[in-house]
Length: 256
Image (cartoon, rainbow, N blue to C red):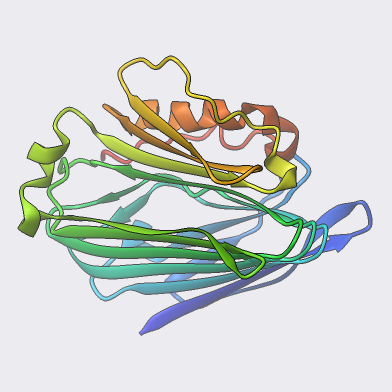
């Protein structure tokens, strides 16, 4: 059975309000008080992770000129068995969505499928990241598939999917020293000031690709989850006034 959730953000005076929030078990939605300009909602699940048979479907709607931050209460653990998570979002004209979940890790034997689909109306903006950790079992899941689709004005800005599957060869052997993979995507006028030029790196590997005049995607492979997060956090540092104390103060470890 699929557990469904809904979030709707609307402009309210000089700020943004969470106009609607609905969740079915095991999905939970939290609305903490926080600093920063955006209205915020956090996702969570009963039991501290996804269990065999869990399917989560979250719909997000951001109204005109609204500014929304959607994250998670903490790292997501995908336990043994088959699980799935789907997020669909629509951002109205001049609205902005920051979809920044904590890292996730798949345990031994897990089969996980995750997809994110975002529709941007003209003038809308999106900031998104996705961080997959090797976790305690060090890439020993059965399979993990992630898909990302962003459309703007009815045209595809990005439409991709990647699959890590033990049937194609041992994942740990293929990824070697890397313990985390991250993707950061920024699009639209609200985030046009973020830089997409390559930068000197330490132990991680980075690749940046422009997506038109006001969008880019950053890929990171790092030895640890903390290093992968540091790479994407560095890119969004100019947005502290929007993000407040998130995500810099959060504990991102998903190894345990």
